[in-house]
Length: 209
Image (cartoon, rainbow, N blue to C red):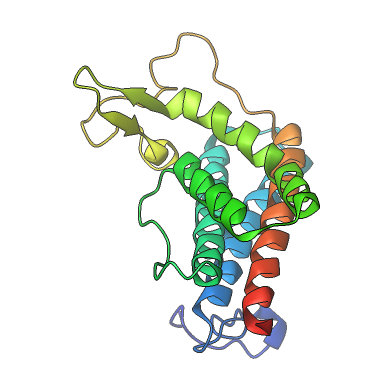
């Protein structure tokens, strides 16, 4: 058995980690990884639809959701980094994992940078599916403790227990907690396209100015 990090004689059976990335462009590299995570989510979901007689969807939904959410996070951080450069803030991106807060930061940065009302209207239209999804997600994983501390359990697709060893939202539910895979693909392909276009738009704007 060969090492995992090794060549196959058939070039079509190799994956090159540094073919799409560049040591000179870290924001571009983040977009590459974000694209990969979101593509993995939808490709796996489509594969499930081809044959789910063995109910593999019940297992694969966890890596599907993890990839989708992590892809969103990396896209939003890449967009923030570009916009922080354009707005001369001296910052990169917020280091936390709260997707709704990362989107709020992006909206704020776009509103600071853009003066054209039509461009703002287009941006708002593009992120509408993402806003709706993140609101839905927050209703499942976000809560406030008795002491007023916000809890955001984005690890729900990685572990069945949270950091305090409490069950995630779907564990103790009596009724089925379900994801419509067909609808998931429609929603996340839309989100993926919008985030990729926005991320590349501000990246190229930076490079041209």
